[in-house]
Amino acid sequence: MAINNILFLGHSSAILEATNAQGPYHIAIDPWLDGNPLCPPQFSNPDRLDLIVLTHGHSDHAGDAVRLAKQYGSKVIATWELANLLIAQGVPESHVVPMNKGGTLKIDGFSVSLTHAMHSNSFGTDSGPQYAGEACGVVVDDGERSIYHSGDTALFGDMVLIGERFKPEIALLCIGDRFTMGPKDAASAVALIKPKVCIPIHHSTFPDLTGTPEQFTAECATTCADETLVQILAPGARYEISQ
Image 1 (tube, helix red, strand yellow):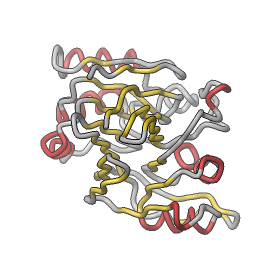
Image 2 (image 1 turned 30 degrees about the vertical axis):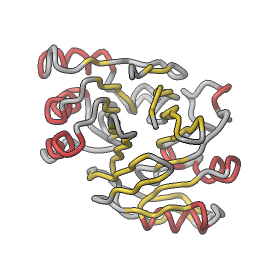
Image 3 (image 1 turned 135 degrees about the vertical axis):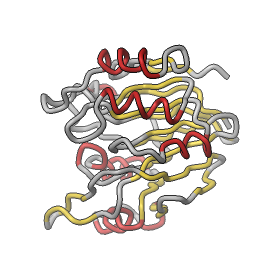
Image 4 (image 1 turned 135 degrees about the horizontal axis):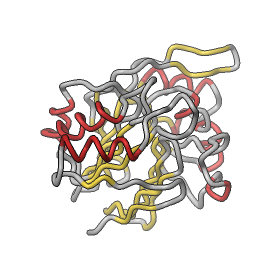
């Protein structure tokens, strides 16, 4: 099992392009593709999606999950409340994998863990927004390295435990401010987690998201200089992981 590339598709959408014993395997985290103004049109319908992992139910993270799960027959990991809302919206129950924060699940050769995050959470249904449990972060481990996706969160001190417990080589951290951490707090999160590489996410999509990758890079230069490489990805770009 190996995660080979991280394909960034704008906002918080990322696809981990991997292989397992059966061949190519793609893990999508918060794949908001259709309707995402930053997602390149050619990626609205990827070649494959084997597993979808959702950090929370807001439309800019889970708003495309039902369509994609049905189209690709993907398994979907979500917290208990959100998992049940997805089933109610038509995702086959046999494809939905409920979890909760603190849990780790082995699935198709990979380990998926849900971590704490500090954020609100709801999911849009035909009858309006519904409470969707607590928001979370995600760690995916291929046996050689782990990758942490923060989802939407504020800065919190126990991020140090994420670093100590999972030792993520790569962290995808929200930096947009107003609704999540801004560049300064995100740089503090890097100092707590101590990844080798950090990819800024949840920025530049809407005017309200004022935090920029350039500001984040400057803050990291002060907070964690020479410890973490900040890798800025344009939507549609890949970060190649050296094995």
